[in-house]
Length: 313
Image (cartoon, rainbow, N blue to C red; front, side, top):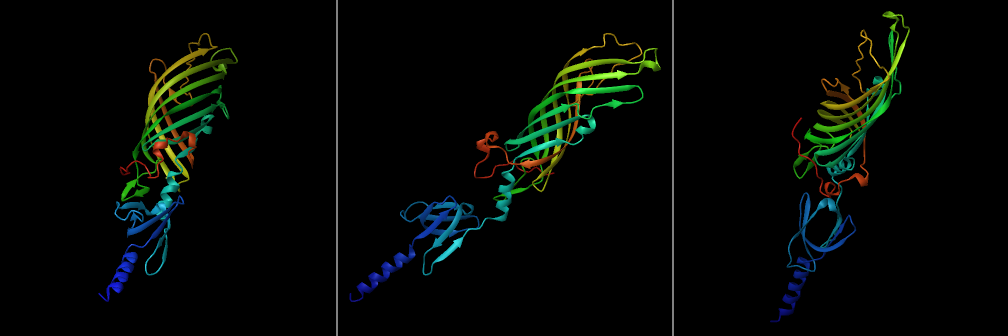
């Protein structure tokens, strides 16, 4: 019993050392008093210091700023951001895109669009076009001038693309990248004034008339969008649908020799009331940006990165 005090103090010291206090400081500046049990590749397991018999708690390493380990020696561990994680956050913080329809100036109008992610694999896209800038198609005996505007709006359903993001071993695609189906509605109002020299056919020097078109078009199509440097998008789209159109004209009676066929509506090509199909073909170039908070679906922007699974190229 002479050695009892020595044994007692040795046991007490061993207990203190075996359950020393560790400190975890999170990125949200929370200070956790803990007993760290395991430091893994992606997570840290610990028990709360005040509850040694409590459950084991798991914390992702990307949520931790620093850890202070107490033992025989004091050790400070700084949790550095995984470069892959930084890249993923950079991608997912920029889930919208402002687009320019590249060939629109060559077709006598200017068109722009805006796309943003609503849910993984489901985006919205809206567009506007101004008909008139640079307009003027002229040959030896005809000149057409147009003015008007159109709006387009609809959802995009992405089918998947090559993987850009990796989360816990699973690969995910960029929310703006890949193949997709799109359903859209187009509202169009355009006025086309045509001046033609009829001297080739009759003793009338010129004939001028104006056709006004108001239309609603429902379109479904297929396209693909590419991402370059998480900054620029390049894409194409081909669509087919039905158009419902109203036409008024200042030309009371079309001469027998004159076929008044105008298929171009700038937002789409229309084949007429007897065959009311509409086609669209677009090439876009865009700039990727951060989605405004008021457009975000909050459920899609959690701390754990959501996105759609890759389905290959």
